[in-house]
Image (cartoon, rainbow, N blue to C red; front, top):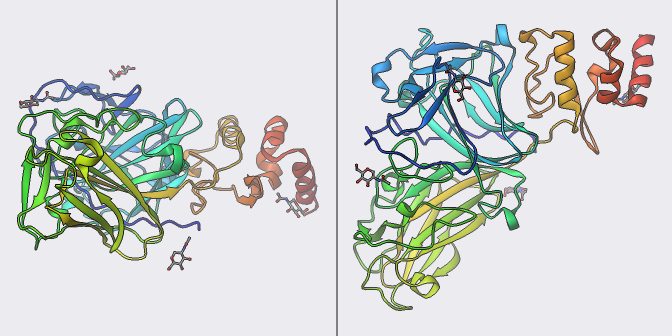
Amino acid sequence: MFPLLLQFLLFPFIASAASPASPSRSSYGLSYSIDCGGISNFTSNLNRQWLSDRYFTGGAIGTVAEPQHFTQPQERTLRFFPPNSFGKKSCYSIPVPPGRYYLRTFTVYDNYDSKMRNPSFDVSIEGTLVFSWRSPWPEAVARSGAYADLFFPAADGSADLCFYSIATDPPVVASIEIFQIDSLAYDAATAGSDFVLVNYGRLSCGSALFGPGFTNHSDLFGRVWQSDAEFRDPKVKVKALSSGGRKVLGGAHAPNYFPPQLYLTAVTVEQPGVGLEYLLQVDTRLDYMVWFHFAEIDSGINAAGKRVFDILINGKNVARIDIFKAVGGFAAFDWHYVAKNLTTSPLSLKLVPVVGKPVICGLENYAMVPLDLASLPGQASAMRALKESLRIPDRMGWNGDPCAPTTWDAWEGVTCHRTVEGLVITQLCRNKVLLGEHFALRDKLCGRQEVSSNFSYAKDE
Ligand SMILES: *[C@@H]1O[C@H](CO)[C@@H](O)[C@H](O)[C@H]1NC(C)=O
Ligand SMILES: *[C@@H]1O[C@H](CO)[C@@H](O)[C@H](O)[C@H]1NC(C)=O
Ligand SMILES: *[C@@H]1O[C@H](CO)[C@@H](O)[C@H](O)[C@H]1NC(C)=O
Ligand SMILES: *[C@@H]1O[C@H](CO)[C@@H](O)[C@H](O)[C@H]1NC(C)=O
């Protein structure tokens, strides 16, 4: 139940397209765009405010080997964390009010350190392991970088994005973007929100990539939508549909605010009687939340029963869809399903015709990664206070939560143990040299009884 080794996510938006300059509205309350390694603020050609590098616990600045290969300034600079100087665990702690957020990172190597060796490291958000980068990276990703994104809940006033060095490799990050999203988005009301939703595919059917930071299309939550072309079964001939300038109503409202652009294009099959299949790479043993986005944008389909199809997930028939019957024409219809404990990859999503040809506007697939255990409330802040007052050196890696992710043995000198209430810090409580006269902190960290018994235990040694 502890080690969730998510393989590297293959959704690289390799070098972004040149984009027209016009303002994009892209915030739902709070948002940050941080240019890691960047030394000045700037406004992008899409009118987005980028901040110079900030909120990091340590590390150093680097620049990709071939800056001319990257269209966006924030893609050219990076921050890296050599473990010899900054410890195994380094973080960005970004101040955010409690809520739910979209996070997008850009990671690139491009031989910034002239060592010709891309690093292995893990990444966590709020103490939950989400990405595992392992050397060697795919060639295109090492050279041009890759974006990865997810939704996460933040409970404690800061979003902790942490990096854990494998062996002695320095983790790297080139940009960090955070957008606040609705606390009820993606079915939090029934599915709950005590997990991270990691993007394993967010596709717009029959269109090119769009979204804030890449095109001038807005998306209130900052989401980027990739073209579906590479994820379809190549043996099936398809036809792209467009709403022909007509508006599609009903998608852009609380809590999900799907972008209007999503419903203006769709894909259908050329031949009647043929199904439409998408294959998405997944990591097994996790649950996945799959969203389907539909709109009837063919004005010829003007009554219920004219276009009916079934949704098959890994061969299992899970729903019958009649878009017109559900919402009428030129209106958004969204449907989602949780596929539990997947045992095979890729995930097959198939639309099988019942009447007429199936049609689809968009797809999303998220791994539902359960939040890892963290230290007891108050312990992490007490530990940070202790770190300040003891002037713990950077190389001890005392950053982020002392106990989470549970698989990272990251805070040198600190050991965490599982109890019924959560994780407690034990090793430190026994260490009279480190704790010394910090009685107030000692009480907060260890509890009076624990301290006295473990301290007397320590004295007897
Ligand atoms: C960048 O912008 C932020 C927020 O507006 C401001 O606090 C900061 O001083 C600016 N930094 C630089 C280097 O101009
Ligand atoms: C985005 O740019 C294109 C091309 O310049 C323009 O046609 C379109 O209206 C713009 N869209 C928005 C939302 O500004
Ligand atoms: C998931 O499936 C695997 C293989 O079928 C099984 O061993 C495991 O117990 C399942 N886990 C859960 C949580 O159902
Ligand atoms: C405290 O020390 C005692 C031994 O004296 C040990 O049994 C107990 O598990 C320790 N408590 C914790 C939280 O480690």
